Amino acid sequence: MSGVEWLAEKIGRRLHAVAGGWCGRHISRPCPKTTADGCYFCEDFQSDLQLLPIHRDTLARTRELQSDAAAAGRSRAADVNARLAAAVEHVIARITDHDNDGLAPASDDRPDHRGETKEAADAG
Image (cartoon, rainbow, N blue to C red; front, side, top):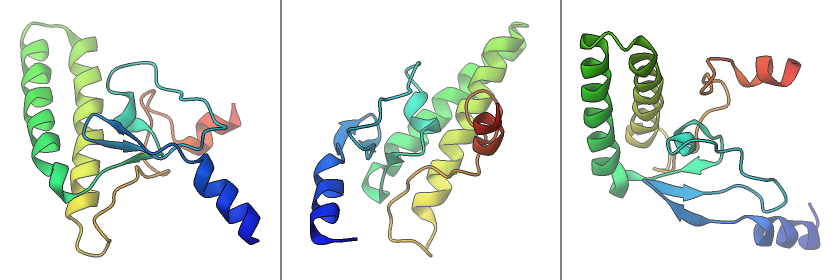
C-alpha cells in the first residue's frame, strides 16, 4: 500500500466508542446494526482486557434472561439470548487469549445473528 492509500485507510476508520468496546468500521461502509446487541455480532467490533468486566456482566445478565425466558416458555426470547451469550463468550475468549495482543475484533467464521456464517450470508 502506498503512503497515500495507507493514510486514506487510517483516516477512513471511524474508531468511536460503543458499549463494551469500539467500532473499527471504515467510514465508507454503513453500519449494519439493527439491534442493541448488534455490535457483538459485527466483524468490526473491537474490545480489550480493560473492558472484560463489562463483557462478563453482559454474559451473566444475558444467561439470566435466557433462563427466565426458557422457564416462561418464551423460546424465541431464549434463542435470541442464547445467540447473544455465545457472541459475548466469543469476545471474552478472544480478549483473554494469551496468543493475541488483547484486541478482539469479532471473527468472520462465527455465525452472525441469523445463525448463518459470513460466507453463507454472502452467497445469498
